[in-house]
Amino acid sequence: MNAGHNGRATNTPRNAHFRSIRNLRGNPPAPNSLEDSILVKKIAMALLLAFTLIPAASFAQVVIRIGPPPPVYERRGPPPGEGYVWQPGYHRYDGAHYAWTPGHYEQPPRRGQRWVAHHWVHRHGQYVLVEGYWR
Image 1: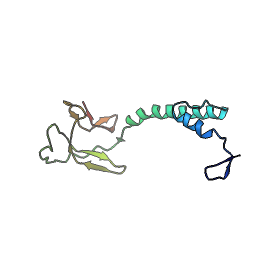
Image 2: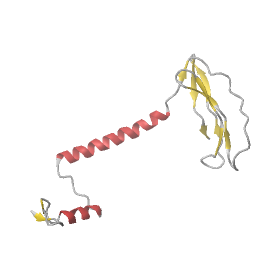
Image 3: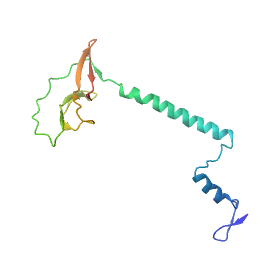
Image 4: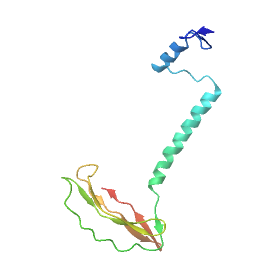
């Protein structure tokens, strides 16, 4: 046992502090057991699965049997600044009914892009919402 900074006995080796500082400087300790390597593999698999599922979420579609109501006329004011593009409103389906999402001005992510608005497409007796995007 070693005496700690307050004079009490501790169970840590005398050079443990220096080993931890060395590890912070870019010398990570080697996995010292089978459990460590299994944990690393589990984390790697979880990250791989997460990155695999991210694109699937962006392809999710809303499909409804009843078509949306006609678009709401919106009076738009002047843009808040140069380069802003109007994104028209659209009807989204809220689980039980359609709800209007009002339009607004937005700056494109890159100069010269244009907004392709949200719209509903009739496919195989159902209506599918095609999300808006920058082109």
